[in-house]
Length: 160
Image (cartoon, rainbow, N blue to C red):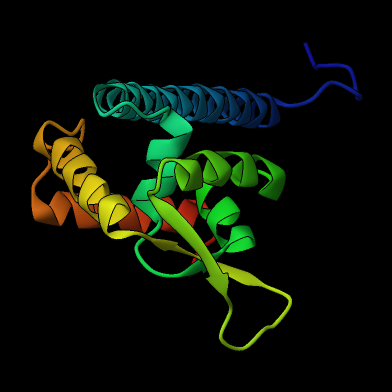
């Protein structure tokens, strides 16, 4: 008995089945990897919030302090905080009222201001960083593993 002329042969069907299996496995792997990245981000966020609260800070304030390791413009800080400049301004206003941050004239752009930690801000930042490092969700990784993870994440995010 011969198959109808328009029926695909067994080889074509097998290739289609294999292609669908590969697609299904890729979707499953993508979902699993996204779940792991989201889970890690949640643990890091929880960790930050816990230590920020212990220092009398909000998570956003702690994030700003963590990222202020040198003079930055508001736009630069917002980029590092992954938020809009208006949100960063609100956070910096509160840090400034607490005497932790100062706004200074930018040395080369008279329209811009730079954010600089005060001595109190520097001290609080150092305490925060020590607390975050002490029991970090990444503490179980060795130096080579951390570097490999960093490189993989930078590549996935399209960063050089």
